[in-house]
Amino acid sequence: MRRPFMSLLAIAAASGILFSVLPAAMAAGDNLAAPTGVTIPKGYRNWEVVAPSQRDDKDEIRVILGNNIAMKAYRAKTLPFPDGAILAKLAWKRAKSTEFDSTFVPGEPQRVEFMVKNGKKYASTGGWGFGRFVNGKPASEADHGSCFPCHQANVKGHDFVFTRYAP
Amino acid sequence: MRRPFMSLLAIAAASGILFSVLPAAMAAGDNLAAPTGVTIPKGYRNWEVVAPSQRDDKDEIRVILGNNIAMKAYRAKTLPFPDGAILAKLAWKRAKSTEFDSTFVPGEPQRVEFMVKNGKKYASTGGWGFGRFVNGKPASEADHGSCFPCHQANVKGHDFVFTRYAP
Figure 1 (cartoon, rainbow over the protein chains, first blue to last red):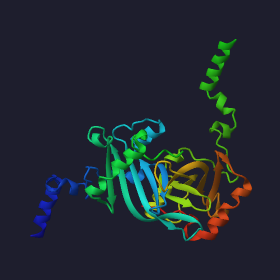
Figure 2 (tube, chains in turn yellow, green):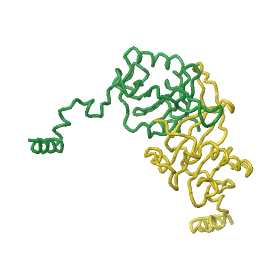
Figure 3 (cartoon, one colour):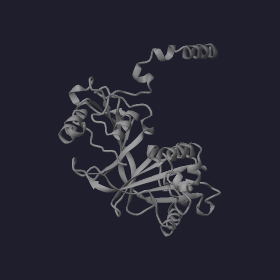
Figure 4 (tube, chains in turn purple, brown):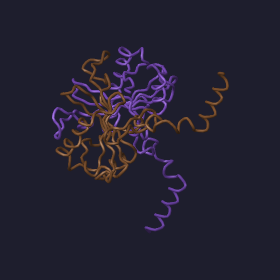
C-alpha cells in the first residue's frame, strides 16, 4: 500500500495540488503576517547596512538594513522614500565580549522589525507598514499600535524614519 | 589654441594614454596602500553585515562587514577563513540621538579597517593582512604593527578574527 500512496503524493506535489490547499501563510514557509499585513521579507539578512545603533535603556545593540530600493533612496537623499522601500531593524541584547575589554557584541536576539513603504496601503500610518517579530512570530496588535505614534512624534520630517545613512 | 588641445586630450583619454602614465595608486582613485599592502576594497560599503559592536572605552559604535567569500565561510562555519575572504570594520564615535532618548547612533567616522586573507602573502600574521585607514589615508607602519599581536593574543582559536556572525 505504501508505494501507490507515495506515487499519489508525488503526483499531487508535482501538480501543485498539495500546496494549493495549504493556507497561504504556511505555504510561504510559516511566514506569518503581522496585524498590519507585513511579513518577514525573504533574504533581508543579506541586505546592506544603513547604520548600527545602540540603546542604553534596553541594553541593546542594533543594526538597520535596507533593501535595494531603500538604499538607493538613502544614497540619493530621496525623501519621501518610494513605494517598495523596506527597512529592517535587528536588535540583540548587548553582551560583554569575553575576548576584549570594554567591548560589547550582539548577545541574545530580541526582535526583528520592518518598515514597508506603500503609500496607498499604509496611508493612515505615513505610508509605512510596521512589522515586529519575536522569534519569527509577529507581535500583538496592541504592540504594533505603538510603532507609528512614536515615529510620527519624533521623525515626521524625515518621512517617519529614525535611521540616517552612516557613510 | 583651445580646441585642438581639447581634441588631443579627448583622443588621449579615449585611447587610454592618460591613465597609463599615471601612478597606479592615483589611477585607482587615490586608493593608497597600507604598509601591509592592503588597500581599501572597492564597494566594501555594500557588503553584508557580520555584526555590529560597540566600545565603551573609545565611545565608539561599529559595524563589521564581510565580502561574499567571508560571508559564505561565516554561514558554513568554515575555519580557517579561505583566501580571498575580507572583513571590513567601520567605526564611528557614538552620538546621542537628538530624536530619541537613551539611543546612540553613528557620529563622526573614526576609521575603516580591513582584514584580507591570503595565507601565503601574510603567512607571518596568521594569513591576514591588516589595513587601517583614517579619512581614506592609511595609518602609520607603527600603528599597523599593533593589529596582529592583539588578534593573536585574544582570538587565535577563531582564525584571529574577533567578530562572530550575528544571526
